[in-house]
Length: 226
Image 1 (tube, helix red, strand yellow):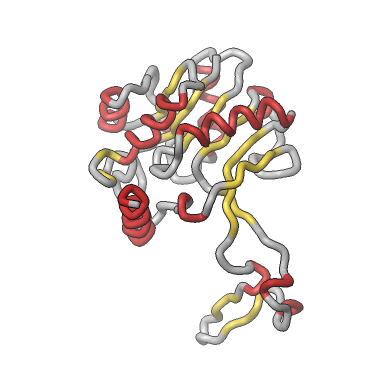
Image 2 (spheres, rainbow, N blue to C red):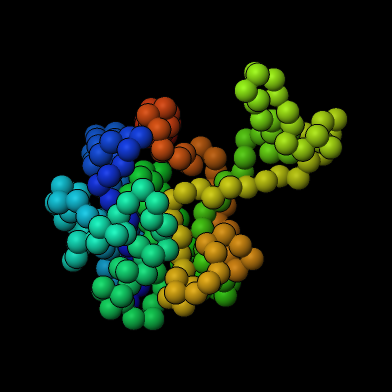
């Protein structure tokens, strides 16, 4: 079985009810479910949630919600990997590849999910995840002190030209493909055993705050109108 697990707990704090809050005309989680179904690479698209409303929205969008996520796996501090392990075991998913697809990933595309699976199979990596470049050199980052002054994180690069610094990348925060052994192993999601699937920056936006939400919706609508 090739499985997609969409984690979607009900207790989001900074953006309340963000998994089912309307985004560009439909509940946020529907965008992820639609991309997963459109990709055609999954035998099953399942939502792991502790919330009845999220479960109802997910079923209406075409996803399976075959179990209620235990409260012990639905608090603010629960990492992703235990949630995926629980779903794999609860669904008796076998030895096939498993994709964790976040519920707040409206920019995800079906083609990206398919490309991620293809990369997992040909690369021999344990995990595959989409990445994007930072828009500014991270080596020139600064921290602000309590007195309002600043300090460079890497003062050795204070006089280094931006074009002379190596490009750096970050997790796009959309999905993770992994082998079953990887999900139950000790390797981190991001590390030497993971392969990168590059995405353009305009299709990557974390949605953790109300400001993130407004920016994401503006970018989304601009892309749809382009």
